[in-house]
Structure formats: structure tokens, C-alpha cells
Length: 261
Length: 322
View 1 (cartoon, rainbow over the protein chains, first blue to last red):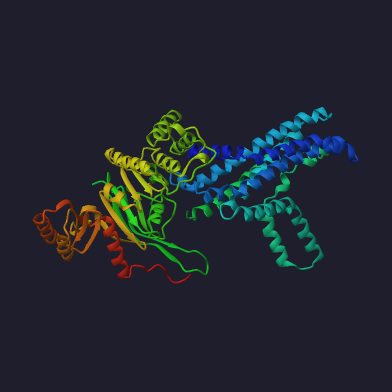
View 2: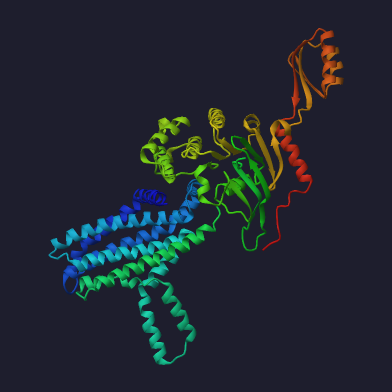
């Protein structure tokens, strides 16, 4: 099983790295890092904060863009181009196919994010900044977040067209970044005694099914010196991300197993 | 006794195009058995269910009913495909890979080690006549080259059973000749070859047995020699130097007659009529250039069986809506 998944993952990686869009995204990201100093000079406050914030945001955005633009067409393209015929007629289980495609794209995103991170971490000290543990942790956390988003994209891609998948994945991404306010909002509703039992139920379901992506955003901790969560807490967040991605991949497999080609 | 190489019992596939569209029967309870080391031809008109059968056998489609087996293992089980090779009609590959990389990638899915992958890819490319294009990207390949690569990838695991969907499609006469040779070579090596084709002369020339499919049902299956009655349909005769009087006498005997230059072409209904025509020609000192008995071909048989099946009401294509 491992060799088949590995073969599919490496093939997906090879396909993705031959896509010129990827290099364009990387160049835009590197340009954003390079121009962050100018932005810092124009803003009020510490210019180094702006450089750090821009660098971390660029790395995160690059990963999100790869997830949405490449991930949402990942499975659909195989079906549309009929390359799936010669793969699934080999001793490859449908779950192995989904896992291989997922890991291949995660590898692609991680390599791109690592290249941009390296550029940022090389540039930051030149501007007088200091590369430290919170900065590195923030970069790693955004990579874990991308792993979760790719799993969502793969799930939608196994069931729908790239355009619909991109819309749904973007909605889940936005909801995941904003879902942290749902408990506060529900508490306000309870305090105001406005009723809204139905709304509360909907919000509760939404809170549990959307990924809590906020926990992977450590920019405040890295840039604004907000206390960094302890290592155990960070590990739990990573575990949460892995579990969420696993659930998405299981859903993708269940959908994909029902498909006829 | 060993299990058949390919078997199916009561295989049923129903297509559901949309919520408000009528269901369409792809396969209506198909039974099939292909013995080991057999070349089996699968014949049918467009939409008869040939590709649906093949996709069900190779695991691309789950049947709605019935079961299929490859070398005794359920076809839905991925492990059954370890001994199977499949070449789809108009195969599609990753365009950014070269032909060699493509074969090595597929070999890797069977867990073949690196050294064997390299060696086998080279041998197969040579076997299908693609050695010169081994390191060219697949996106530059012509349709015929893709078809050859499709056959090569089907053999990458040295399978016991090969299922080929229209393997001659897109090939020039040389390509078709090569594929016919390849199929016979595979049989000589003990393999089982199941292939669908529209080219009935290929099926007739290559297959031990064949099946004819019509509207998702098998309407005929057996040895080709047994399928064809062997009955003489008519006799074609060509004469030279026939005088006008002889031509008039022969025209009365023949079903059709046509003169082209000094040659007279006659179609005679049966052998006694042909004997009488020869007697008259020899007596009139005309020269008999050719005398050929026309027997029923697979194409004639196919058209006859289809006509009979259609008249028998086997064409129930649609079921009640959902």
C-alpha cells in the first residue's frame, strides 16, 4: 500500500511542480517579502513588525492559494482527462488514490512554502529582525493549516467540478478563520435572552463541522509578542489538524468509491 | 479444474443520467466465462455494452447486480487486478511524463523494484515499437503512438489476463498488423486475451471464441467456426472471352452479371448453378479466370444475429424513471 501511495504522491508532486502558475505565485510571494520594508517605512509603528507580518502572511497565502487553485481540480482533472482509467484498473484502492493525491499536493505546497519561508527568514535579519522560535512556530503552524485546507479541497474535488469545489473550499476556509467568534456570539444571544434556539443550533453545528483554522494563526504571537502557547498545546493543535484532515479524506474516499468511470 | 480467467454471472449495470431522466440499462444480466489461454473477441454495435462490461471487469465500475471474477477473485477487489492488464480505448496519460517515465510509474503501482522497472519499460517500448520515442513527452504523441503506449502499460506487470478495449482503434495498417502479432504472441506465452473490436475480420482471424452483445445482452457466444454455418452463400465467377450468346445464356443462370472490358463477372446462387455455368463456358471455349465460393463471414453472422435479436424484442433499453 505504501509504495502505491508514494508512487501516486510523487507523481502528483511532479505534475504540480511542472505547472508554471506555481512559480508565478512563488515570485509574487517573494516580491511581497522584498517590498515589505517599503510598506514598513510607510506605516505607523515598528517597520520590522510590518516586515514580519507581511512575510508570515505571504507564506500562509501562498499555501492557501495552492490549496484552492490546485487542490480543487486535483481529483476532477484525473476523471476529466481519464488518466484515472489506467490507475484504478491497477491494484490501487480508491482510498489509496485519494491519499496519494493528497500527500502529493501537501508535499508541493510544503516545498513552495518552505522556499518562500527560507527567502523571508534570510531577508528578515538583513532588515534588523531576529529569527526566533515564535517566528518558526508561526510558519510551521501555517503549513499545518494548509494541510487541513488541502484535505477540504480534495474532498470537494472528489465530488464536484473545480469551480464549485473552489467556491466551497473558500467558504470553508473563511468560515474556519472566523468560526472562533461563534461561542461568544451564542453566549451574547443567551445573555440577551432573545430566544433564537434555531439559530443557536445552526451556529453550533457550523462551529463543529468547520475547521477551527484560527488556532493555526500564530502571527500575533510571533509579531506582537503575545505569549506563545506551550509546546504541548501546539502539538494538540497539530493533532487536531491531522484528525480533521483524516476525516475529510475518509469522506472523500466514501464519495469517490461510489463513482463510476 | 482451475477457475476461468474471466467470469461474470448475472452482471447488471443501470445508468441513471439525472433525476428526471429515464434509467438506461447498460448490462442486463450478463453471464460470461473465458477460459485460460483463450483469445476471446467481444463484438457489438456502439452502445451495446462492450465498454461497460470491460469497465466492470477492471474495477472502474461497480455493477448494480451480479458478480464478476478475474482469475477466481472478485473483480471489485483491488487485489484481483494484480494479474490483470487493461488497455482502454483511446488511452490517456500524464502529458508531462515521457513514455519511459509513464511505464515506470505504472510498474511502481505493482510494487516492481527500480531495476526491474527500468528493464521492463525498455523491453515493452521496444516490443510496441516506441523505442525511438522513449524519452519524448507523451503530449507530443500521435493517436497511434498513444494506443501503442496503452498496450505497453497493460503489459507492465506481465499479467496473466489482458483486457483490451478496441486495441486496433487509431492504428494504421502496420500498427494493426503489429497488434495482431502481439495478441498471438501473448497467447503463445500462455496469456488470456479478451478484446472488444468493431473490426470483425480481426476477431474472426484471431479469436478462439467470440461473443456478440446486443442491448446489454449476450445474444451469441461460442467458437467462431461453430458460429458460422459454413453454408455457401453464393459463387463468384469471372470469365474471359465470353461470346454474346454465352453471355445471354449465363445471365439466365446468374443472380447478377456485369461486364468489365473483356471480363464477365457473375454471381451464381449455388454450386449446381456454378457447375452448369462452368460447363457452358468450357463448351463455348471461354476461359474461366476465377471461381470462388462465398461463405458466411463473422460480419454476415453478426448482422444476422443482431437482426434476429432486435426482432425478438431484446432491445428493452429503458426502465421506469426513478
